[in-house]
Length: 210
Image (cartoon, rainbow, N blue to C red; front, side):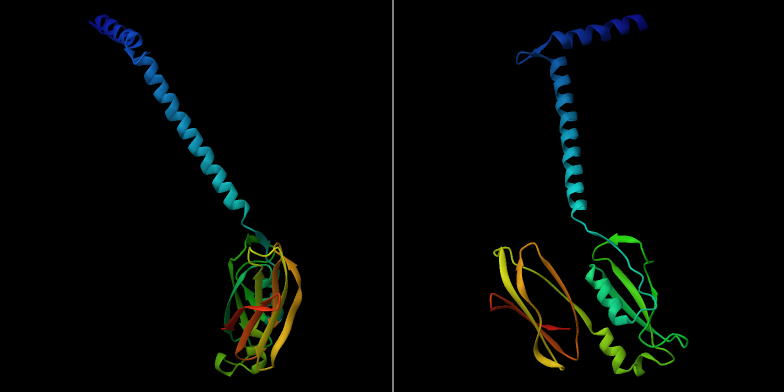
């Protein structure tokens, strides 16, 4: 009985080999269908890998510096200049001077992706957040100006001005740059501030800095 079933299976396979569908045997058609299916999966997989690799290759990796025991102002400028976002918490540390970074959430020399957030705990000394003096407030008002030429410019003269309680239209940058340049300019702000960016002496951006 088993031998009979095996003969039937072999006969059916032979039938498929010999049966023609639009000039091709059914067996050959099935093989081609599987071949095209696996080829489709292979091409889709390779395309996905290329896309993932392309995205990852555009992500900039930076090395986190040590900012513990630094004044908050310079620490902020150094971290922002390499593309990190900074979150700040103020705490009492009686044995650490006011305005000094007591802790950083990402350990020094660790490599991380650009735009990652690092949390800094800044000492208030023996005081409280409500009694923090003007020196600490001004150090926390450090700011990084980020700018890149719009795509329609290959090169252009760029002038950047800051207006705050210390003075109106302080020029913090003035030079000719190309479209490949990315400006990261640290400035210290005093009170409410306005940023103005001129391209070829024409006002391009004017915004309040929060």
